[in-house]
Amino acid sequence: MPVKDDAQGLLWTEWLCLSVNDMFSRREEQFGMADGRQINCNHHDNFARSLPSAPTTDLRGAVIDGAVLNRTLGVDHGEVTMLSDLKTQVQQWLRFEKKQYTSSRMRTKERRGTIFTVWFSLWDIWYYSQLPSVDATEAIAQTVDTLFEQLAIIADNWPLGAKIILPEAMDPTFLPAWTVKRTGPSGSDQRADDQRNAIQLVKQWNAELDRRATDWRKGQIYIYNTNDWMLDQVREAQLVIGDMADHNGLGHSGSPWDSVHSACLGATETRLSSHENEKVLRPLRCSNPAKYLFWDGMHLGPEAHKMIGQGIAQDIADSQGDSWFAHEQPDDSKGSDPKTGPDEKPPAS
Image (cartoon, rainbow, N blue to C red; front, side, top):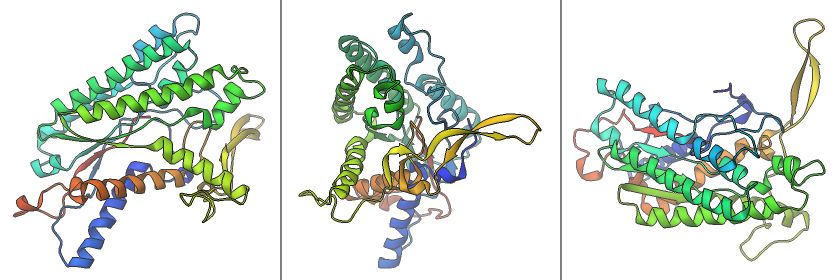
């Protein structure tokens, strides 16, 4: 995994954890009770894989099933060198569990509070949008099948019923990299065929997620509508520029973003390295990353991660109750140790 730039801030999963802890702390202050059920994130196991951030070069990321991707793309598109796909990551997690938890690192109550977060779709849709519509639609259907097969493997190996947070797909055509690589002056999609395809694939992906989650019987799945969230950010910024507001209140309070189209990491510049006469390319970085919706061409910025993590925490608390996050239910809290907390499994992306 690449070294993370400190300016990128916390992941949305980390903000989720902090937000839930704040909820329990406020309840403790309000009602004067400490039941020891908050998330402490003592174990934050991340199996996601990504490349170092770059404005536009070497755009590769993790998909759900690399073998299916290369078989579907065929020789016309060339073989895509994959990072560890979801199937591989799940197997890595199984080996990790067998090695780590046989030593009883986690007690039963901690397992009950473990939250799995799985966020795939971006790279699958990025690749499949290049295909004819019929082929792309079939590929997405197979991919979502594989996604839920892998979720079933997780659930079958988690004895107390897995709790899974599953953000929906975001429209990749809003990404800065889409403009550069596809619809921009030097892009490969001058007729916007890929763009129309990608929009339909996002709709297909999210509709299938909603349907599958409704029928899920192996634990609990929470779906977060990340696409609507992102579209609201873009729409609000546009309304503010036009000095307008809509009936939902977007635009009334201004926009948190200086830019919703450009990335914080911009074009590269040539600098001399510590070795004499050796030149290296380094991406230019904005002065205030929190004011950019996107960190680089393919990834959300630090404030976006914060907003999503806090939004998911609040949405689950509002719809399910904050006990959804608890590693103990109220009726089995006797004898609990308030110093321990659950694992949280961050997303693969």
